[in-house]
Length: 591
Figure 1 (cartoon, helix red, strand yellow):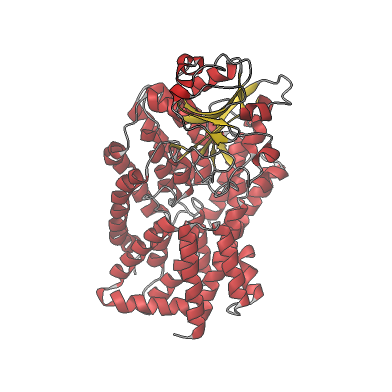
Figure 2 (cartoon, one colour):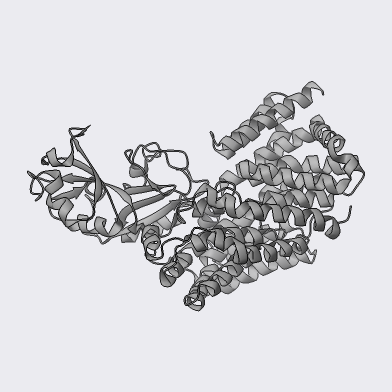
């Protein structure tokens, strides 16, 4: 092993550790790796930044814009509303239609966008059928992953692996080259969820779970007693506040000090700060109760001018700027003019001060805002609104244009008329010219954290290639399993890939392993195609953890899931796909 190989492998190990532990944002880690490789002299500065102009990076950015065009014109929402109308009388019919819709759309547009758009539909079905949302949300997320592997543009991972293949002298992947085994995954995965998976999911409590899902569940609310409050001068245990409401677990703070006496000995005074746990219905009553002021409401609503307000629940989106930060660090109040009234973190009510608690993607925030600000908040990619306040305004007259443009992008690439990069960029231009999107919306649609992640990991892939580290790792793998034949080596690659993608970004996993897969195939003297396919499919097979893929993170808190739920449902699914990949990938793409 040379010093250069050892240096690159050290960067690989460091990157994997940082990706897996999430101590730093994945895009920052990616750029740090790129800068480190340049500073160490492993790659040149031009090679390091070449990932920003890489076909995979540009194509993925274009696909974000195309997905936004479909969303803005209401194409996905239109189907979602029809789904709700057709399936609202039957759980099984609803579930089948939901999974078919999510899988079908995810084959052509961003799967996270599909899940976010369908969330209000799922919540409405859950309420209508009196079935806990936990029975719907994991099937929704998983079906989006099933559909994403069916086409070249279904997931950024496929685009990335295809671009890496071309870079190494391999022919590009066709638009529907992923479809044969992708359909196997879609059909088998759907059948597994319907026959087995849904029975392994938490049953929920019907109305009770639904109330929690919509915020009519446990929240931590901070209030202040005004001098005219009926409870002032009474003992906490006998106060009208406790007798007239359903609040519990009350903590009293006076002069910033918590009173530890039992409720029978605490006499309430004006200005006492109470931290109470209650459901949303009780919270609504508290807002209307004289003599009680919500501390946050008083701060956020001073300039309301009588404007109608609405309570909004929003999920912190994957890759949000709030992920890993507190509201105070993110300057949430000054940025949005809002103050969170409550936070639900991984299904639990946190007792720390709301402004200072560290938030994670998937956490649910409850806040009150003026109705006319809803559209502004909905446009912000920091959140995914899940309260059924109202649907956004769509450009429905442009829907036919958006569908036609997507059809052009897919069709021209499938027929070989032009590379997917070219058709996708032309599609973005047409989306703006046809007024499906404004230019500002097109820029905002691009998930720049993904772009920077891709650019950085592509630099790592370049270093693996040039240093000989990819060949070294491939030789090590071949020495270990090469005597057992290429099928066993392919099986090992699939296993390694789906384990790593549960620990770190799917794109980072694909960029790391694709060059090694090509080198391994070369060492075995076989075609690299099946190995690249194994990496592409397995990198999207994130079913065992709620943090392995964005769609899982998005539905984690909303479904009141635990880590164990993903392990229980996802582990058999990953093992089934591993077996199918070992048997069928070499059949579809011979060695």
